[in-house]
Image (cartoon, rainbow, N blue to C red; front, top):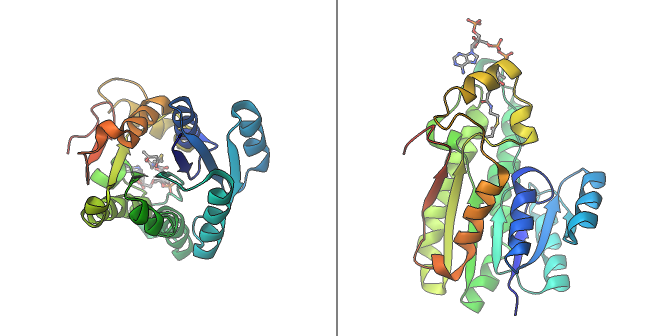
Amino acid sequence: MARTALVTGGSRGIGEAISKALKGAGYDVAATYAGNDEKAAAFTEATGIKTYKWNVGDYEDSKAGIEQVEADLGPIDVVVANAGITRDAPFHKMTPDQWQEVIDTNLTGVFNTVHPLWPGMRDRGFGRVIVISSINGQKGQFGQVNYAATKAGDLGIIKSLAQEGAKKGITANAICPGYIATEMVMAVPEKVRESIISQIPVGRLGEPDEIARCVVFLASDDAGFINGSTITANGGQFFV
Ligand code: CAA
């Protein structure tokens, strides 16, 4: 029987590539989105992947949404906590709202996504938790105190979950993408983006599919001995 995968923020950007790659690998996939109904509808029409709208920053919303996905597709075996936002500003200009929005979505959103699924994964003795962190959680980034804090936090989450889930057949791992050609990176001012690309030894932005293939591997049975790890995929921009 096909396994079921949930991808948050799964209809756009890196998440879209992940949803498609997991479907291609034989999973039943559900993708969540936060706001863009039009894009989500077009995504479902193009891929046949069902989309669900909820705010990952809200626990009750997430719990209810996950219950609906499981009612439709069956128990979720693989969860990819991918949904994320940026609210970039130098620290001296960063507002408490910019801090809080990013914390709610990128960090609390991971808790809200994984926590409701965790008891079922423990009961069934299988689970794959994959969190999409970032190069900027590893190295920090000018203008991203909020974002870098959440992405570093993701690494603490997976290392702890890895220890708690190991005996129950659950692995928890992270991927740290570098700068990938998505809307999020295209929103960075052009001059800044050009300077970033000049710091990537392979001389280009990454492709969303290059991250999606890492997810498919971590979700597979072949990756069962990999737990609490981080795959760094950044074109050589930063070594951990
Ligand atoms: N390092 C050092 N100094 C920098 C700098 C940097 N990277 N970027 C800007 N500065 C300096 C400027 O030169 C300027 O200095 P002066 O006042 O002496 O001239 C000062 O900081 C203020 O700069 P700005 O006036 O440009 O500040 P701003 O408020 O307009 O915007 C910013 C600053 C929002 C941080 C903008 O530089 C920016 O967007 N940077 C990109 C941040 C980034 O990499 N975001 C990643 C988004 S993609 C993503 O997050 C996905 C992922 O996981 C990789």
